[in-house]
Length: 451
Image 1 (cartoon, rainbow, N blue to C red):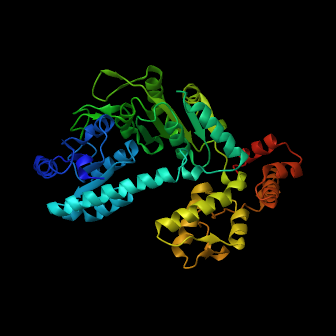
Image 2: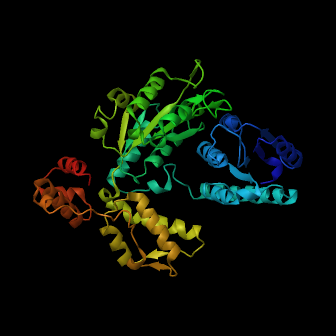
Image 3: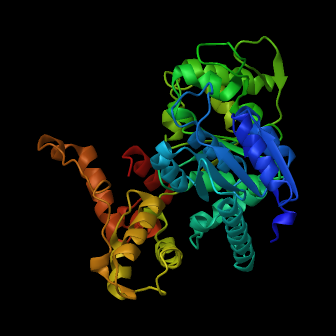
């Protein structure tokens, strides 16, 4: 791709930098847009099709976290994963710049830079992005995301449900344990929806403090509180026309729930420091690892909010309940990470396959992915054996019951269920038959004992 065909956005609160980059690039690229205020990033990305963003690492902004560049880099990645990002940094912020590469930046440049080097870096990054885009199309990558590859009946039912509900504007609640792929399902629904050309904005609401909750979601006016030095749109407003994905919705307080419910009912937000409501058009997707029965406890969660966010419910099964997918995913991750770390094609021998099938994967698909990545990195051979597969010690930490607890009927029942499921390699139908239960009754007990 020639630089004459690309559009570049430059975000820096130093006007001298903006002028310098504009003068350098105006004869090299098709279009250069400069912006001093990073708060305008979401609207600029919605209204323009940029190939590259040059982003400063530090802003005198209302976020005031010491790494504003990382914050805005994450926002860019949420709004447009295809656009390349080069971070602009001072020499003293090299460590932070290196971290930005892990967060998805393509490269970083140090002020003052050499013009020829910057042009060369841009050419190389644009060329690499173009190749990656072509490879993705040639591979026919599934819209539901590679980690959602599945052959099991349980996941095929999930895929069918996604196809049915994605074109609608129904609010979706995604349930499932950590690591089952809730964020991938949210992305798949957005990509297959009529809003796919508009932004998908993800917010981990469970991580927001009471003080940040309103500012992050609803935005604020300059002067609304200490450090609010600029007007700022909230995440809900940024998702206008697209999809808002609220992750870990089960962890927000009752006070936060009331504020969110008001916005969802009225379909309008009011920025902190103003009295002017702003209409918003969003498709809402929420996710939680909390079981629905626990979520329905009114001392923890408002039932009226549950009904508001849960027009359609999708429950993702844990990996131990869809053992048919383990080897498919393991081989996929082996291929993916062999390519990433520039290694030859790596196979798994029978001992490795057997070990994978016997392990219950308490960390679900995420644990399987990390297990395969570690194995590929550490292996010097083209075949992985059981000794190469080391499962996470974090997930393997098991608290043994007290002696008296072993006598409890509930503990005996739980242990019996675990043994039978393990005996049948996670096959719920066979386990239920041996236990003398229906599949539904067994699923209820799995939920009850958090298995």
